[in-house]
Amino acid sequence: MQYIRSVEVGGTSVPLLVAQTAVAAGYPSPAQDYFDGTINLSEHLIHDTTSTFIVRVSGCSMEGAGISDGDELIVNRARKPVDGSIVVAVLDGEMTVKRLRLTPRGVVLQAENPEYPDLVVGELASLTVWGVAETCLHQLN
Image 1 (spheres, rainbow, N blue to C red):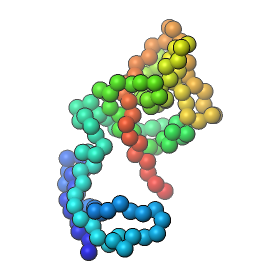
Image 2: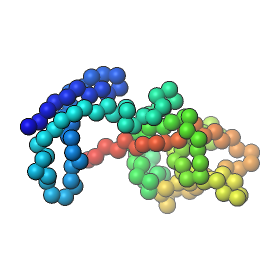
Image 3: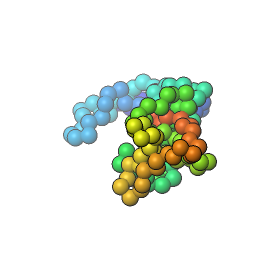
């Protein structure tokens, strides 16, 4: 038996089927027709509502990290970036999404696609890490 529950999405109540169990990617589960419960997507995806934003990605430089053109990133501006974080950065006035690398030679914004060069941040460059990407919302075809 399936149950339709009200789910809060962006402050709006939306009817949605919610599965109580995980769905196998192999053979179907005998319990696949049993749905129960509710889920608040904001509760699972957003850890700090006051400093979290959604940004849409343009371009293919991060495909190796599973981030494609048109995907949306949930970005937390309060989270401290560390070496290896995927960040939204402003480099000389231009926003970009890259992996932050802190090297002995300085800061590098690393592309995750071999067709795109890494951005080595020079001494005279202006760099601001705008936020740290926490989740990628990727549409399936």
